[in-house]
Image (cartoon, rainbow, N blue to C red; front, top):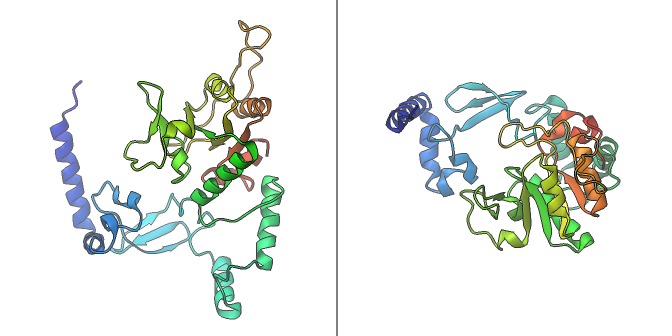
Length: 295
């Protein structure tokens, strides 16, 4: 069956016209935004909207958002997990008002008692002994990669094909399907250094490829989402096997994927970092807790 590209383009144009007709205020705001914002939006990915312009929002409550044209939507993104309790829950609103109106000071650049309380709760949920705060998940990943390189004295990070770790330069990479070489993700430009010097990329779930990538001892850490979340939800394999060192023709007993990766990291003295930005909603302690992973 041959895909009729012209018919497809006509259908897309028709749907975009209907979208623009139904969202005149968003269209007007998008046009106004182009006078002061790059591509007319605060962040570049917002311009990649199927309707040709992004929806401009007027408000959000609980799990719903309302756009400037009065349409209400169920919000399945919830601020990229930043609003998992819902938008503007009353206890949070009360706490913010108390901080700003009663005690004052939202950006004092000094610690508060609340910081230690939050740190203790994170420690309880994820089992890690010490915490630092950042302004975004991207910043957190940059922070942890620098720490891993400092401790390990190794130059590279291992990531999985089509994983997502924010705008960290070393992670905006894929393995070229034709050559296997590490190259920038499509559309990514201006990389500061050749990714060949910083990054290794393997297919998610390919234990043999992970083992080969870690064998040279030049990977400071494996940076991984417990499940891929930016190309749909891709769960890890339930069971994987690995060739025996004593008998290369015979497989070891199969094991769940992540415990096998953890074992490889221990054997090669490689750090393993679980990026739970998106998977933290698997349980109060994220996938690490729900799946019994190591911390």
